[in-house]
Every structure is written in structure tokens, then in C-alpha cells.
Image (cartoon, rainbow, N blue to C red; front, side, top):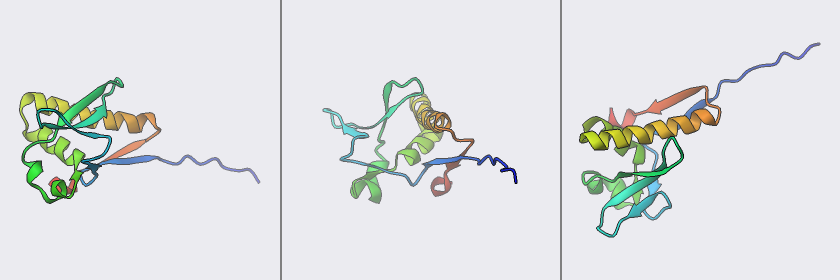
Length: 115
């Protein structure tokens, strides 16, 4: 009996608006002027960041030490000023490319929490 080789589809599911980084974690930083940023590697592998907006600092997750980085990126890519829109789109794109490079055949961009 011959073995039939099967190909499995890999679905990248890391782009989800409920995902968090911790405020005291390695991907969040408070600058000397008090501004807060979320750190990430852009599509070229360079360190970059997106700001934590004031509206998010009024949420329960923030008060509990959590920053919903993809929620911020998606909403600011839609509603932010031009520069913030570009930064946040770059943030999402970098994560998508990271998953594709890791072998994902499909990506699940889950925005249920904000839609």
C-alpha cells in the first residue's frame, strides 16, 4: 500500500483584536515624556512603534495592565490621523508577513471585538 502524502493548510491566527501585550512587558514602553508606545519589528526587521492612544488609556484592560495592540492598530488605521494610519497599517502588515514567512497559507484577521 502506497502512502498518500497530504498537504495541510496552515492558518495564521495571531492577528486578533483581543490579543494583549502587558504594560510592564517587553513590547510596551513608557517614554520619558509619559507617552506610551507598543514596540514591533517592521517588515524590514527594523524596530518601530505605534502609540498607545489616550482613548485606550480609559479602558478596563488598560487599568488591568493590558494593552490590546491589534485593537489599537485596527481602530487607529481606520480613524487616526494620516501618519498614525500609516504606522498602524505597517504594524498589521508586519505581523501578517511574519506569519506568512513562518509558513501560513491563510491568515485570519479577526476584528470581531471592534466591528
